[in-house]
Image (cartoon, rainbow, N blue to C red; front, top):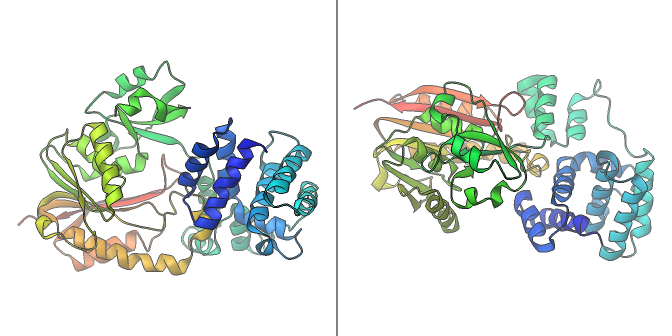
Length: 435
């Protein structure tokens, strides 16, 4: 059996059956099966996930009982085969079909004839056709780009059809790997020089003002392969962080000697960025509710040489009495629907529904209220999410400010993956009145 396809199958099965995150499932399967073409494996995993609603819709027209009635392993194999036929050109269609049939014979014996027939029909262009966008633009966009109907309707109401299509296309694009230089260990130029002889190249991200000056050219797109296998990474010269997160922390403007509290810190990227802007001077309490995430923050902070960071096990929904009005800066990067990062976790596109999204603002408000209690007079509070949803972003900030006249808005920004340099990301900076 082809090891590359077997690896992709196992990752997709883990996601389908166990609800695993795509990045973790892919890493686990690759670590277990050691495929010889990892880029192909990742392209197949993420390609199937990014197009799953579309693939199932097309295949439904070729499966008498519908895709939902097909056994899970065979359903995944059909998606893999259909995706390769329509979107990948590495080998001819007949070869793709033969490889899928071979896997079916091993993984779900007895269904190889069924899989063979469905995929041959798919290759001939049969199967369900997409609806006419002029008649039902929402249904068309949902199926064409494989977003849940709830996301589609929400974005159509907020942005209209052309911008919704643009956001969906951006969400289906292959994301950049963005890194932030650890300016406490090296300069951006020194890192670029150190990696010059490797298979990696760094392209500066042109972060716009007012954020760019504070970041001092320390954010790069990494091209090539193996950057996370370099000595520079192992020695903490940089870490992975999207440019929007770096920009948000720069807007918060933590300063040397400050006390900063990050109430939902894991995996720690914003705490690390703040530590560098603080020049390693001051104190950062990086909080999370899970002990294993504390260990992750602790280990990465140690590798980066950030001894001002202290991981704290704490529930962000409650104000820690020890932190009451103690912080110059507070970061509340809250749990959200994650619609700004679907290009990194494409399984979220089909899972997101309005009922679940409507539950999030209550939690987000609770965390923001608790975080506000940690801000000292004159201090600054950052509220942020990695989503594109007004009810989780602007509406939360506006409601908070209406209820807290001691805070005023300093800065607010929604980044979009189709027009900006980064993931979809929202943040606002609010300042508490001096005593």
